[in-house]
Image (cartoon, rainbow, N blue to C red):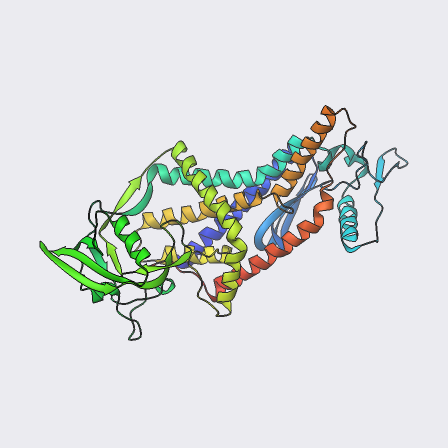
Length: 453
């Protein structure tokens, strides 16, 4: 029951976030006089809808996103001086009618032409002054940035609430010479941590050296040890070399001899990508460090998250490829691989059902999970590529720059930026996003990630 509750809470929270994201587009678009004909959460067949005014509101069957239809996103064509369409005529009532000429030459040209024609099927004669592409550039930026900005605001509010009350918590080794807390009995691959040892698993170098919980490490290969960080760095850098370990037990100075082994371990405490390093098999006595803070602290933490997110986006195709290989059994799934909403729901369910987690920790974990998804969605949508919001923002900024440059040079107004010309790129990006989304969903079903016990 708790598992199902965790999944439901997570999915509902994400759907609410999607709905708010789309409101972030729709509200400013309407405020600026734009025409919004549809507001939907989900994709695919329509489950429910109601029309209020000129806008149809509804829910679709596949809850993997949402959209708002703002009329006039693509101009028919752009004239170098006037920025008008191919042909403008007037009907019997005097209303302006825009005609778009279709092109049949070239695959991409045809795709662009068809997209223009489909866009202008929604334009009515009285909509001439309400088209999105005719808005001033700064209004376009506000409309398109509204959606991802809402996601980042949601993340900020959740992070602020957690950091100001529960605090940011981390397990920090005690200061001074490291005291051993646990000694691993056998060498288990990092991605399989948590399982019991088998007869095929070799003993860890720490066991071979005779180390026990409570031992105080004093030296490593002749180097005096003063902290866990120093000891850890020496172990990792030792690779498969010989290790002479000095330690104290009950006030008696002892020496253990072994050879460290090489194992794939996380690169750092914050970077979970696996690196081949030396491994001993001990953990230090540690304490929970709690840091609380307000808005400034939260912004600082989100700044670090933004940097990590941009780095993760750069590695995303490689990470997804790793998940694809894990699906077919060519490698183990990396613990730092990305997850879809399916994987997020599974993690939320496992957290809610975990018997060893206090209720407060479960709630904080779920909140941070929702905040993390919102933050990633917001940052991802700012990537300056169509069909993402960032692609439209980039087009509006380019329009402002181009018009400003023409004005400074005393040249004619170059007109609106024709984002339709970038549709081939948009199609490629959309296909790539679809493939990655499918791979992650399948991966979350076939080789799912689990929370650590």
